[in-house]
Image (cartoon, rainbow over all chains, first blue to last red; front, side, top):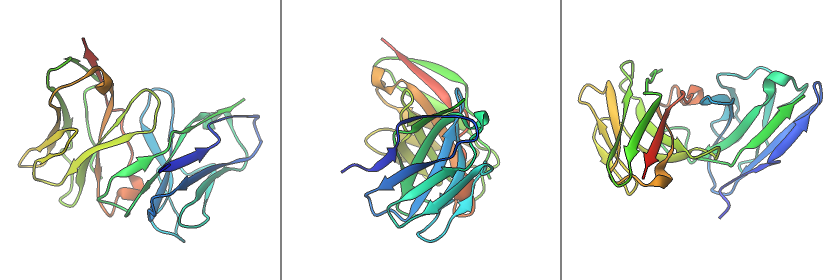
Length: 113
Length: 111
């Protein structure tokens, strides 16, 4: 049972390039989330999808877009990468939108130069 | 949303109980207190959560004060593998989309 799988694990982008971070969960969870973690800091919520077909902004959505492709997959897109987006990105899922534990992927380490 | 305050760091001797405090004085009545930990740079791992009653599972115990303004996570017999950053957050159905992990407490378990 893989849980939450993120791809890629590492990525280096040049300023202005675009890319999509992929996330898939195999636990039949309804809710999925994208967080970023800057060095030495806690996780901040970028976007979330409470259920298939819905997405909403979290605390730090600027510069990002998301797609809930189906119940399993939730992707995060950077349209024009900036050095300030250098961070570790974590995807998570939970069975319901609240009151249940969240399971996290292993992260994508993104560097924008 | 509940703003949580945790000490920056704590040490604990291996085999002893680790007691990690969290202040959440602004927590609302429907917000649950969740605890997660992050080992090295891995994805956070769920530990335990509760509303107002004390909770226990195979990993830890959660003690919530009667006024719900603070809580304590207890690792009964800390091991070196429990060295991690521990996060306390308040989550409800109205703020779950805004849930942010603060800076947490870095727990170092020493031999």
